[in-house]
Every structure is written in C-alpha cells, then in structure tokens.
Amino acid sequence: MKKIISIVGARPQFIKHAPMQLQLQKKMNALTIHTGQHYDENMSAIFFNELNMPKPDYLFQIGGSKPQGEQTGIMMTEIEKVCMQEKPDAVLVYGDTNSTLAGALVAVKMGIPLIHIEAGLRSYNRAMPEEVNRIIADEFAHLLFCPTNTAIENLKREGIEHPRIFKCGDVMCDMIQLIAPKAARKIKEDYYFATIHRPYNTDDDKRILAILNIFNSLDKKVIFSIHPRTLTRLHQFDIAESDFSNIQFIPPTSYVDSVSYQKYCTCVITDSGGVQKEAYMLGKKCITLRSETEWVETLHNHWNTLVFDHLEDIYNALLTTPTNYIENMYGDGHAAEEIVELIEKHL
Ligand code: UD1
Ligand code: UDP
Image (cartoon, rainbow, N blue to C red; front, side, top):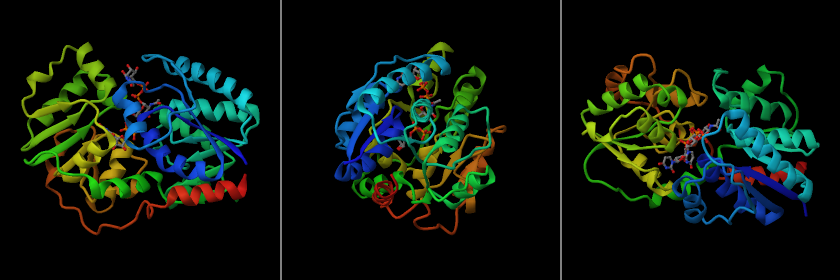
C-alpha cells in the first residue's frame, strides 16, 4: 500500500482535505501533517470535528505572527523531519498558502513526488505571497490537479505541459454539495455576508476603515465574519467595532455556518478565494474587494464583480442582476474520488 502525506495548515485547506482524506484512506496509508499555521479553535479544530476528519497524525506548534520566511522555514524543518522518518511515496499539498510552499519545497528537495491540488490558478499579481507559493508548487509537482480549463491554459502559458496534468473539478465543490442542502437559515432579516482578510485590505488603517465605513452605509445589515488577522489589525489601529452600527461582527464560523450565511444572504462581499467560489456554487452574487481574481470564471455575467480602487463602486455592483448561471462550473461533486483514482494509477 502506498504511503501519502497530505499537508494542511490554513482554514481553507482543512475544508479541501475533508473529501480528499475520505477517499485517500480507502486506498492508501494516508497520513496528515497539520503545520499549525492556523491554530485557534475556530480556525482549525472546529473543521476536523464538524467534517468528521481524523485528527492529524502530526501537528506542529509554530506559533502566530511570524514573518513569511520564518513561518515557512519552521514548517519546512518540521515537515522534513516527518518525511525522513515516514519515507512517504508522495507528498500532497493544496492551494497556495505558506504551508503549501513548505510542503512543496521539502518534497522536491527530498526527491519525493509532489501532488498539487488546485494547480494552475493564477492571479498574475506576484506581490501576493499566494501567487509565489502556487507557481513554485506547480513548477515542481509530479501530478497536477486543475479545477478548470483556465488553470490548464495558465500552466501551458508557463510551459508546464506533460501527461500528469488533469482537470478534475474542485474539491470544495464536493464539500458544498454535501453540506448546502442541510444548511438552515440563521437569521430572518435580509443581510450581506462579508469576510475580509487579505493584507492589502487589512494591514493599512485607512483602507480597512474605508471598507468598514462602506459596509456601515449599506442598505442592509452586514454580517462580517472577522478573520483573526483582521481583528488583530482593528485592535492595533484602535478601531472600535461598536462604531459601526450596521455591521454585526461575528467570530470565524464553522464551515456549515459559513455555507448557511452565504446561502441565505442577498450578496457576498469578500476577498477570500474560497468564498468567491462558494458564492458561485450556491448561485449567489458576489462582490470581491480585489483588483484581480484567479477565479476568473465567476466574473462572467456579473456573478462576481471586482471592486478595489473605488469602494463606492460597491453600490452599483449591488444593483446588478447576474444572468446565465452555468451549472457544475467547478465540477459535479466527485472531484476527490476522481483525483484519488488518478493518484493511485500514476504514483
Ligand atoms: C493565510 C494564507 C492565505 C489564506 C488564509 C486563509 C499565506 C501566505 N496566507 O493568510 O493565503 O487565504 O490563510 O484564511 O499562507 N492568526 C490567529 N489565529 C489563527 C490564525 C491566524 O490569531 O488561528 C493571526 C496571527 O496573528 C497571524 C495572522 O493571523 O499572524 C495571519 O495568519 P497567517 O496564517 O500568517 O496568514 P493569513 O492572513 O491567515
Ligand atoms: N469559512 C468558514 N468560516 C468563516 C469564513 C470562511 O468556514 O467564518 C470557510 C469558507 O466557507 C471557505 C473557506 O473558509 O470554505 C475559505 O477560507 P478563507 O477565506 O480563510 O481562505 P481563502 O479561500 O481566501 O484562501
């Protein structure tokens, strides 16, 4: 039986790993490393519990608030020790976080085949750490699983073209198809659901204040799930949540609650990659506070609108009505099954 080590560390990776681990453990000796990049109960353990995932085999305590290099370096040191001991047949990484980068670099340096889930995504903004992380993972991956044709085309443009690149749909679609039908409405009144955590929106006091002022001026209440990075910044900048009466700040929610808030809101407002996609999967209009997105398919027919330099553009974006919804744009809910079959065949 092949031994595979999956590496997770940040909130969206726990959600992506849930359907994958279920399939992996049927066919392989499937171990999980949690790098500890996210560590609060409601950013980490909550997902293992509610999504019935086995506890990680290895959990590192890397501690928060570290510069990129230090954070990645500590993770690499620890992942390398585990790989030396376990001698896996492959290392599997998801998406584009520093945990992805650490896992990818250790695997390639040790000559262990690397598997990249959510390969080929590009924002073409190299100032984002995520763009650097995903380029490196794609460059060195032995097996690449792309969720869209755009992702395959992006790889081709970089000269990454070989028979081990597959389009398999998106594993987040597997999760949402399972959970969405069970997600009950949490509040009666109409509302917008917001999540904001990108450094360019949170780490500048004027920018985050401008975003909060816009949210506060909207015609419906804004339910704002506040990421720990964002909360830390508000406290650093002496911005008081109580000054924004139209915003209901809530701690990061469970996955089921996140899906529920998205499913029943009037519009999603976010800078999250995963939430943009989930909004589309739920047939919900989305406004993304970024100047570009790697999930370009969501932009068609006004399902998703980018707003960045002029935050007042949110008002107009809220008035548009999206058209021509494409069913199963991100897969049919069986991506993990298909991916694991291909891993088994090609390892
Ligand atoms: C990371 C990823 C980003 C992803 C996001 C998902 C990188 C470079 N960034 O961003 O791609 O979209 O996760 O949510 O990998 N913190 C806590 N408790 C936690 C987690 C974080 O307090 O459980 C605080 C710490 O102060 C930490 C800060 O949030 O310094 C930022 O965390 P970090 O993981 O470095 O980056 P994210 O902004 O979460
Ligand atoms: N999410 C959640 N609770 C929240 C906000 C988001 O469970 O309060 C989920 C969301 O449904 C999606 C994932 O977290 O599945 C997205 O993760 P995040 O926005 O942290 O990271 P990104 O996708 O931008 O990398």
